[in-house]
Image (tube, rainbow, N blue to C red):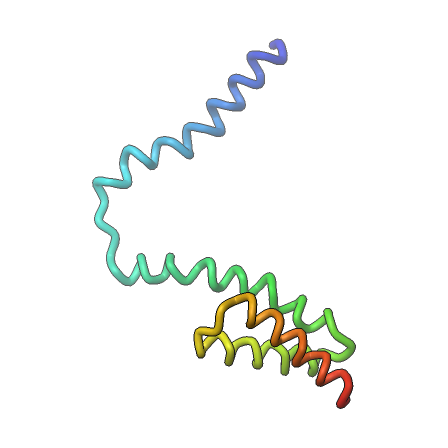
Length: 99
């Protein structure tokens, strides 16, 4: 088996599971609770990726927790993301001066 046929075979095996659902997904009606669950997956994935960084990016994990809480409060008040990041960094620097 030469390289070209191997690449084509691997491409077909890889593409089929990605393309076939497109033809069948329109026939299924998903329940609203399942769609709500799917909408929360990106938020949960970001939380899993960001939380360890919050704890280890500063001198003590307590400072990171306070910074994360501050950023969450800003997010609840719908502050734009740029300002959440900048204000949270400023808040952490103030905490580092105090502690």
